[in-house]
Length: 259
Image 1: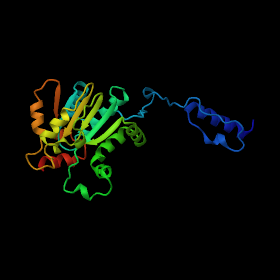
Image 2: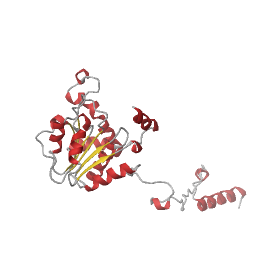
Image 3: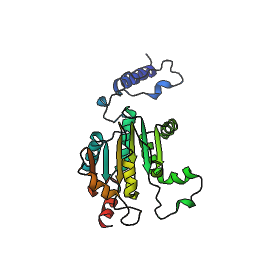
Image 4: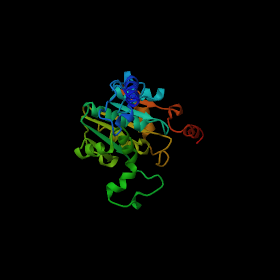
Protein backbone atom coordinates (compact mmCIF):
# COMPACT_ATOMS: atom_id res chain seq x y z
CA UNK A 1 0.00 0.00 0.00
CA UNK A 2 1.36 3.36 -1.00
CA UNK A 3 1.82 6.21 1.44
CA UNK A 4 -0.92 8.28 -0.25
CA UNK A 5 -3.49 5.46 0.02
CA UNK A 6 -2.65 4.91 3.69
CA UNK A 7 -3.24 8.60 4.45
CA UNK A 8 -6.60 8.55 2.65
CA UNK A 9 -7.68 5.42 4.53
CA UNK A 10 -6.68 6.91 7.88
CA UNK A 11 -8.56 10.12 7.07
CA UNK A 12 -11.74 8.19 6.21
CA UNK A 13 -11.60 6.20 9.43
CA UNK A 14 -11.09 9.36 11.49
CA UNK A 15 -14.05 11.05 9.78
CA UNK A 16 -16.35 8.09 10.43
CA UNK A 17 -15.25 7.93 14.05
CA UNK A 18 -15.87 11.61 14.83
CA UNK A 19 -18.84 12.14 12.54
CA UNK A 20 -17.09 14.80 10.42
CA UNK A 21 -17.43 14.98 6.65
CA UNK A 22 -13.96 15.27 5.16
CA UNK A 23 -13.93 17.26 1.93
CA UNK A 24 -10.68 15.62 0.86
CA UNK A 25 -12.73 12.54 -0.05
CA UNK A 26 -14.16 14.52 -2.97
CA UNK A 27 -10.93 15.09 -4.80
CA UNK A 28 -10.78 14.44 -8.52
CA UNK A 29 -9.00 11.12 -8.13
CA UNK A 30 -11.45 9.84 -5.53
CA UNK A 31 -13.71 7.13 -6.94
CA UNK A 32 -15.70 6.35 -3.76
CA UNK A 33 -17.36 9.10 -1.77
CA UNK A 34 -18.35 8.06 1.73
CA UNK A 35 -20.70 9.97 3.99
CA UNK A 36 -20.35 9.84 7.78
CA UNK A 37 -22.57 7.14 9.25
CA UNK A 38 -22.46 8.51 12.81
CA UNK A 39 -22.89 12.24 12.41
CA UNK A 40 -24.12 12.71 15.96
CA UNK A 41 -27.09 14.90 14.97
CA UNK A 42 -30.61 13.74 15.63
CA UNK A 43 -33.96 15.39 14.79
CA UNK A 44 -35.06 14.76 18.35
CA UNK A 45 -34.24 17.70 20.65
CA UNK A 46 -33.41 15.34 23.51
CA UNK A 47 -30.38 14.09 21.58
CA UNK A 48 -29.06 17.53 20.74
CA UNK A 49 -27.98 20.38 22.97
CA UNK A 50 -29.42 22.91 20.51
CA UNK A 51 -33.10 23.77 20.18
CA UNK A 52 -34.34 22.11 17.01
CA UNK A 53 -37.90 23.46 17.24
CA UNK A 54 -39.09 25.16 14.05
CA UNK A 55 -42.04 26.89 15.76
CA UNK A 56 -41.36 29.49 18.39
CA UNK A 57 -42.35 28.21 21.79
CA UNK A 58 -44.71 30.54 23.60
CA UNK A 59 -43.36 31.00 27.11
CA UNK A 60 -44.20 33.68 29.68
CA UNK A 61 -41.36 36.00 30.63
CA UNK A 62 -42.93 37.29 33.83
CA UNK A 63 -45.51 36.32 36.42
CA UNK A 64 -48.00 38.72 34.89
CA UNK A 65 -47.65 37.14 31.47
CA UNK A 66 -48.08 33.69 32.98
CA UNK A 67 -51.28 34.89 34.66
CA UNK A 68 -52.54 36.31 31.35
CA UNK A 69 -51.83 33.10 29.44
CA UNK A 70 -53.57 31.01 32.10
CA UNK A 71 -56.56 33.37 32.04
CA UNK A 72 -56.89 33.02 28.26
CA UNK A 73 -56.80 29.23 28.57
CA UNK A 74 -59.56 29.10 31.21
CA UNK A 75 -61.86 32.04 30.41
CA UNK A 76 -63.88 33.07 27.38
CA UNK A 77 -63.56 36.77 28.13
CA UNK A 78 -60.28 38.31 29.28
CA UNK A 79 -59.35 41.96 29.80
CA UNK A 80 -55.59 42.59 29.81
CA UNK A 81 -54.61 46.00 31.14
CA UNK A 82 -51.05 47.18 31.46
CA UNK A 83 -48.36 49.59 30.29
CA UNK A 84 -46.63 49.49 26.93
CA UNK A 85 -44.26 46.61 26.27
CA UNK A 86 -45.87 43.99 28.50
CA UNK A 87 -46.73 41.72 25.56
CA UNK A 88 -50.51 42.09 25.78
CA UNK A 89 -51.16 42.15 22.03
CA UNK A 90 -48.51 39.58 21.18
CA UNK A 91 -49.72 37.02 23.70
CA UNK A 92 -53.34 37.48 22.64
CA UNK A 93 -52.53 37.04 18.95
CA UNK A 94 -50.21 34.11 19.67
CA UNK A 95 -52.94 32.37 21.66
CA UNK A 96 -55.37 33.02 18.80
CA UNK A 97 -53.00 31.43 16.29
CA UNK A 98 -52.43 28.50 18.65
CA UNK A 99 -56.18 27.90 18.94
CA UNK A 100 -56.64 28.12 15.16
CA UNK A 101 -53.80 25.70 14.47
CA UNK A 102 -55.22 23.25 17.03
CA UNK A 103 -58.68 23.41 15.44
CA UNK A 104 -60.34 24.78 18.57
CA UNK A 105 -61.84 27.75 16.70
CA UNK A 106 -62.80 28.38 13.12
CA UNK A 107 -61.42 31.88 12.57
CA UNK A 108 -59.53 34.76 14.11
CA UNK A 109 -61.05 38.23 14.28
CA UNK A 110 -58.70 41.11 15.10
CA UNK A 111 -60.14 44.55 15.76
CA UNK A 112 -58.53 47.88 16.55
CA UNK A 113 -59.84 51.44 16.72
CA UNK A 114 -58.67 53.78 13.97
CA UNK A 115 -57.95 56.73 16.24
CA UNK A 116 -55.36 59.31 15.19
CA UNK A 117 -52.45 59.96 17.50
CA UNK A 118 -51.88 63.55 16.46
CA UNK A 119 -52.18 63.00 12.71
CA UNK A 120 -55.28 62.98 10.55
CA UNK A 121 -56.21 59.79 8.73
CA UNK A 122 -57.57 61.79 5.78
CA UNK A 123 -54.09 62.84 4.68
CA UNK A 124 -53.00 59.24 4.07
CA UNK A 125 -53.10 58.19 0.39
CA UNK A 126 -55.26 55.40 -1.03
CA UNK A 127 -58.70 53.98 -0.35
CA UNK A 128 -60.20 52.99 3.00
CA UNK A 129 -58.13 49.82 3.36
CA UNK A 130 -54.92 51.70 2.59
CA UNK A 131 -55.79 54.40 5.13
CA UNK A 132 -56.46 51.82 7.85
CA UNK A 133 -53.35 49.72 7.13
CA UNK A 134 -50.95 51.77 9.36
CA UNK A 135 -53.33 51.44 12.34
CA UNK A 136 -53.56 47.67 11.91
CA UNK A 137 -49.82 47.18 11.37
CA UNK A 138 -49.09 45.96 14.94
CA UNK A 139 -51.55 43.13 14.42
CA UNK A 140 -49.87 42.14 11.16
CA UNK A 141 -46.50 42.17 12.91
CA UNK A 142 -47.73 39.84 15.64
CA UNK A 143 -49.32 37.50 13.09
CA UNK A 144 -46.23 37.37 10.87
CA UNK A 145 -44.09 36.54 13.90
CA UNK A 146 -46.17 33.44 14.61
CA UNK A 147 -46.91 32.55 10.98
CA UNK A 148 -45.12 33.30 7.76
CA UNK A 149 -46.47 36.31 5.87
CA UNK A 150 -47.38 34.02 2.98
CA UNK A 151 -49.45 31.88 5.33
CA UNK A 152 -51.09 34.97 6.83
CA UNK A 153 -52.14 36.20 3.38
CA UNK A 154 -53.48 32.76 2.50
CA UNK A 155 -55.53 32.53 5.70
CA UNK A 156 -56.86 36.05 5.18
CA UNK A 157 -57.87 35.17 1.61
CA UNK A 158 -59.75 32.14 2.94
CA UNK A 159 -61.48 34.25 5.59
CA UNK A 160 -59.86 32.40 8.50
CA UNK A 161 -58.16 35.59 9.66
CA UNK A 162 -60.14 38.82 9.58
CA UNK A 163 -58.81 42.23 10.53
CA UNK A 164 -61.51 44.87 10.87
CA UNK A 165 -61.88 48.29 12.49
CA UNK A 166 -64.19 48.58 15.45
CA UNK A 167 -66.70 50.64 13.50
CA UNK A 168 -67.61 47.61 11.40
CA UNK A 169 -68.34 45.27 14.32
CA UNK A 170 -71.83 46.49 15.23
CA UNK A 171 -74.62 44.00 14.60
CA UNK A 172 -72.34 40.99 14.24
CA UNK A 173 -72.38 37.74 16.22
CA UNK A 174 -68.97 36.07 16.36
CA UNK A 175 -69.40 32.32 16.82
CA UNK A 176 -66.56 29.80 16.89
CA UNK A 177 -63.97 32.58 16.80
CA UNK A 178 -61.06 34.04 18.72
CA UNK A 179 -61.53 37.79 18.95
CA UNK A 180 -58.72 40.16 19.90
CA UNK A 181 -59.61 43.80 20.57
CA UNK A 182 -56.39 45.79 20.66
CA UNK A 183 -55.78 49.36 21.90
CA UNK A 184 -59.08 49.31 23.75
CA UNK A 185 -58.11 52.45 25.69
CA UNK A 186 -59.09 54.37 22.55
CA UNK A 187 -62.66 53.04 22.75
CA UNK A 188 -65.52 54.78 24.49
CA UNK A 189 -67.73 53.03 27.01
CA UNK A 190 -70.45 52.57 24.37
CA UNK A 191 -68.01 51.10 21.87
CA UNK A 192 -66.61 48.60 24.37
CA UNK A 193 -70.12 47.60 25.42
CA UNK A 194 -70.95 46.97 21.77
CA UNK A 195 -67.77 44.94 21.25
CA UNK A 196 -68.18 42.78 24.34
CA UNK A 197 -71.72 41.87 23.35
CA UNK A 198 -70.49 40.49 19.99
CA UNK A 199 -69.24 37.36 21.77
CA UNK A 200 -70.94 34.23 20.43
CA UNK A 201 -70.91 30.51 21.11
CA UNK A 202 -67.59 28.65 21.36
CA UNK A 203 -65.68 31.92 21.17
CA UNK A 204 -62.96 33.62 23.18
CA UNK A 205 -62.42 37.37 23.38
CA UNK A 206 -59.32 39.14 24.67
CA UNK A 207 -59.43 42.92 25.16
CA UNK A 208 -56.06 44.63 25.57
CA UNK A 209 -55.18 48.21 26.36
CA UNK A 210 -53.27 50.70 28.47
CA UNK A 211 -55.60 53.10 30.31
CA UNK A 212 -52.70 55.52 30.79
CA UNK A 213 -52.06 56.00 27.06
CA UNK A 214 -55.43 56.92 25.60
CA UNK A 215 -55.51 59.18 22.54
CA UNK A 216 -59.03 60.31 23.40
CA UNK A 217 -59.92 63.36 25.40
CA UNK A 218 -59.72 62.90 29.19
CA UNK A 219 -62.69 61.06 30.62
CA UNK A 220 -63.90 59.62 27.30
CA UNK A 221 -62.08 56.28 27.37
CA UNK A 222 -64.25 53.54 28.84
CA UNK A 223 -61.66 50.82 29.39
CA UNK A 224 -61.02 51.46 33.09
CA UNK A 225 -64.74 51.73 33.87
CA UNK A 226 -65.54 48.54 31.96
CA UNK A 227 -62.72 46.66 33.73
CA UNK A 228 -63.94 47.73 37.18
CA UNK A 229 -67.51 46.68 36.41
CA UNK A 230 -66.53 43.28 34.97
CA UNK A 231 -63.92 42.34 37.60
CA UNK A 232 -66.50 40.87 40.07
CA UNK A 233 -68.36 38.98 37.32
CA UNK A 234 -67.71 35.21 37.45
CA UNK A 235 -65.97 33.56 34.48
CA UNK A 236 -64.49 36.89 33.35
CA UNK A 237 -60.79 37.51 33.97
CA UNK A 238 -59.32 40.99 34.39
CA UNK A 239 -55.52 40.77 34.34
CA UNK A 240 -53.53 43.86 35.29
CA UNK A 241 -49.90 43.87 34.21
CA UNK A 242 -47.29 46.10 35.85
CA UNK A 243 -43.94 47.66 35.09
CA UNK A 244 -42.18 44.44 36.09
CA UNK A 245 -43.86 42.67 33.17
CA UNK A 246 -42.35 44.95 30.53
CA UNK A 247 -40.20 42.92 28.13
CA UNK A 248 -39.02 45.72 25.85
CA UNK A 249 -35.84 47.74 26.35
CA UNK A 250 -35.10 48.28 30.06
CA UNK A 251 -35.39 52.03 29.51
CA UNK A 252 -39.08 51.57 28.69
CA UNK A 253 -39.78 50.37 32.23
CA UNK A 254 -37.73 53.24 33.62
CA UNK A 255 -39.59 55.82 31.54
CA UNK A 256 -43.02 54.42 32.37
CA UNK A 257 -42.30 54.98 36.05
CA UNK A 258 -41.60 58.70 35.65
CA UNK A 259 -43.74 59.76 32.66
